[in-house]
Amino acid sequence: MIVLTPFARTRLFPRDQRGNAIQDCTADAFERHLNEHQPLKVLDGYAPFCQLHVHANWTPTRCYAVPITDDNRHRLRSGYEARSSDELPVLVRWFEGVESPAARYIIPILYSREQLAKEGSSIDGDWGVVGCLYTMEPEEIPMAPITMMRNALGVEEGGSDVPLDREAYRRSVAFWESHANWRP
Image (cartoon, rainbow, N blue to C red; front, side):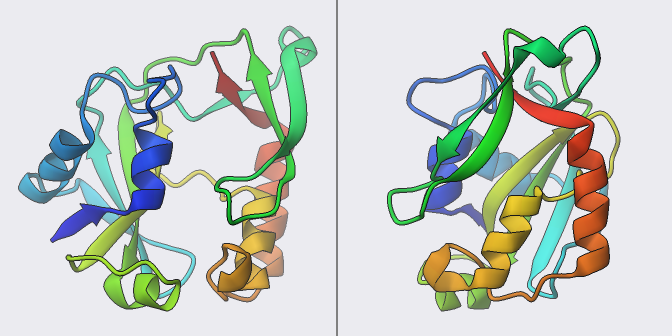
């Protein structure tokens, strides 16, 4: 059984219903869909306790990342933010005033029950959703470099205690140098 973690619930289904979160679907309906529909495929995550389930997008949710072009570069913004009150703020960047197309795929990122317990987040399921990607292709978008760094720092800093993979980090930098998230 797959369940939404509290961390994912607040990030994927925020109270303000922002346009770059999951659209026209409640958290409970999302969780139900994941349990009632087989993924198109399952991708290995960055560690043995992580899986990504690829589903055709059944919502109007928009893509997670937008390519940076000469026409939209002036709309990039940056600031220091924390994902939760327990984490330290890190430098992030995003587009303002740029809207991405509807995603073709929704890819929930799942952690095993054992890993979540190690991180202090027990669940009543086999797998817990910790995040989600919205993409045009049925493939993973590289994890942001700062997320990889945080993961390497350990669970006390909001990570997962997985050592940094230098090659994966370089692929991440290559992708995120030419893409950014967006905000309405």
